[in-house]
Length: 350
Image (cartoon, rainbow, N blue to C red):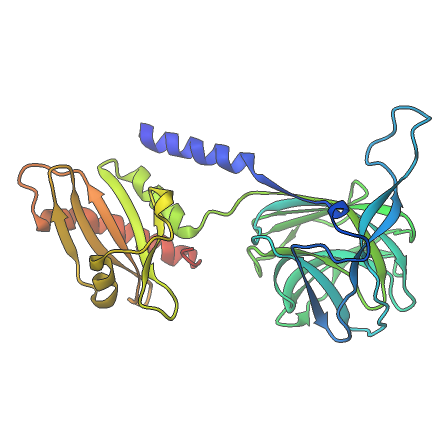
């Protein structure tokens, strides 16, 4: 019990600590697209023209003295292309890891556009045909949420709100599990939304049609995602005090080479599996060995269809008279619990 509580406490601390992405466009030369992003296009028309430009930006905090400058000339991200195609949605996607739970804050300014004047953030982006987006329109005087699934837009959800062009506005998006919240200029402007279409994905800057829009001061605080394989290893170790070591081994796509995808010793992740793991993956054969310190069992891990998706190597405490049969009996419920967890979650192991 003490070991389990320690693991829960450690997990809570790690989850609470989180991580942060901060986009600093001052490191990119004016007229260039910042590194670490991919230029994509949803819909039709020409790709976006994303560049760093210089613009006057007011400070985030109220100046301490009246003599402090009201604005500062700073590097901001701009979408400058004016292609008026109606169903055209330029996306500049951050190539960082996909995010699940996060809080994003950014400032945007709608500079111009004849057909549309919009700016927004796409999130949990899978590709140019699958994502969520929250966008503001100065022409429509509204803020809307919708999702794109396989290139088809859902019905928008939103509210009427004044979005003045030529002025900086602050947008905050919060995602936790299936819940999505949005604030504009510090006010909650959408009721909490719930959707499970996308559990994680990348962040992207978004515009529509011929909208010319700027973005600056973008910060994302997020909870790092732990791969499912590593989660089930940690849970199994917490439940089974006599389990000394546990690792999951699988085969790379299109190759016969095995590799460790989860382990008590995280430094082993990515290393090759052994001979018995390879044979267990190929045939489902269970292997046993023991020495003075532990008993080892290699067993297949199967999905809901009975297909072998991984192999578990378990090292357990041993005792006088330890037999192969007894070791397999001890290992079986641990592996069955791993299989049940994987089947319930239906997420990839890594």
